[in-house]
Amino acid sequence: MFWKFDLHTSSHLDTLLEREDLSLPELLDEEDVLQECKVVNHKLLDFLLQPPHLQAMVAWVTQEPPASGEERLRYKYPSVACEILTSDVPQINDALGADESLLNRLYGFLQSSGSLNPLLASFFSKVMGILINRKTDQLVSFLRKKDDFVGLLLQHIGTSAIMDLLLRLLTCVERPQLRQDVVNWLNEEKIVQRLIEQIHPSKDDNQHSNASQSLCDIIRLSREQMIQMQDSPEPDQLLATLEKQETIEQLLSNMLEGEQSQSVIVSGIQVLLTLLEPRRPRSESVTVNNFFSSVDGQLELLAQAALDSMTSSVGVLHALRPRLGHFHQLLHEPPELEPLQTTWGSLAPPLGNTRLHVVKLLASALSANDAALTQELLALDVPNTMLDLFFHYTFNNFLHAQVELCVRAVLSAGPPSDSSLEIPAPNPAVKHLLQQCRLVERILTSWEENDLVQSAGGPRKGYMGHLT
Image 1 (spheres, rainbow, N blue to C red):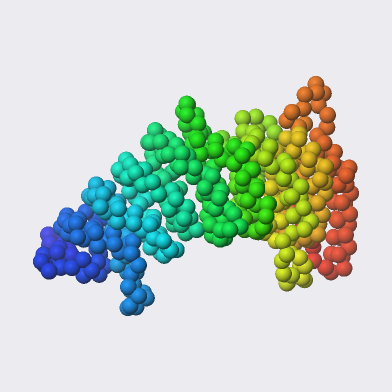
Image 2: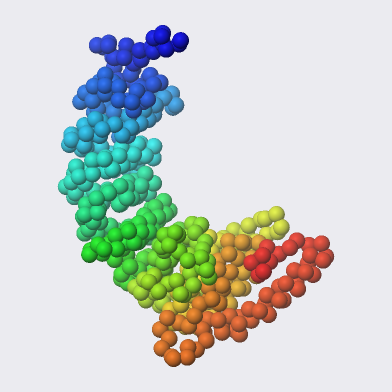
């Protein structure tokens, strides 16, 4: 029988760890060091937890390696050190969380004046993330003592790993009261207002994008938390700040006043769309008469009957109303773009990402079924402009999907939300679509034109599926 023989071979690491002159780099060169660490090899942990070795590993994940040597080897030790520090071994977590000098060494990475190395930033964020998750009290207490923490986060928000660190603070704190304390602390530090300051033409595109993504994630996380903690007496302060009219007005001012930037407009619209989209867990959603499209900022439109307890932010609608003309003008006078050559011809100008996002925003505003907002949109003839773009850009299915969702939502909606008549008047948006926009006539005309083109051997128009 094979179990009669002692086939277990002692770990090569155990033999190596017997050496008194063993160095940390020599140990990290071993292929099985990470696996042995995860299975809690006590000899290995005793070696790694020696203060000089812990300090060396923290230094590797926070300091730029020497420029000399092969490129592929420069980040070998930082990478292995990061994997060890984030291996979720309790002894390592305890040693890092209890030693303030090590935490200060980690924190020093954020205090770099120049741009951060993206790879080292990912190592740093990963180590801080495991500490937030496993040593929550110690790390939150440590960070709250740092007056410049939020400022440093925002200084480096253009680095995606630093944006991730901010989100870890909101998602990895499990105890409700402690999470509420973190939310209140970040709100006192004016994190929302300072993120909106990053969405400004004076900042670069990475800052625009990451600040916008952070705000969108805060909105979604806060709303999900409110659903899960419905009995909590304290509202989410970050969400309340984001939904204030003056907060949205500042964002719109950055987007539309002074020098205009396509990146700022697109990033700002993504925040507005997230605020305008009432969301609930899919398991609780009704499927009848609902229209969902969740791909990257797409609209999530629900029939009015399903929106009783999920109305859009009043502050957003009030702030948006006086700016609708600016957005509508962008559809007529978009940022200048080079002609785009496609397999079926040239687009001059192409629709562009900016106009696509403006269409999403105006469609979402029209679908909010707010009487004053709808009246302004109809006065601007926004539905007609959207239909003009729909038929002009024959093969832009991103645009077609947005316009179709908007039209379906309008046709399925009831009277405006503040209608007080006993016998409600017809929805003015529906009337506008059928009369001023000649929706039925345009659909039939396009259908006939497509049949003529196809009968002559031409391609089927790209929007035909949406017309169907």
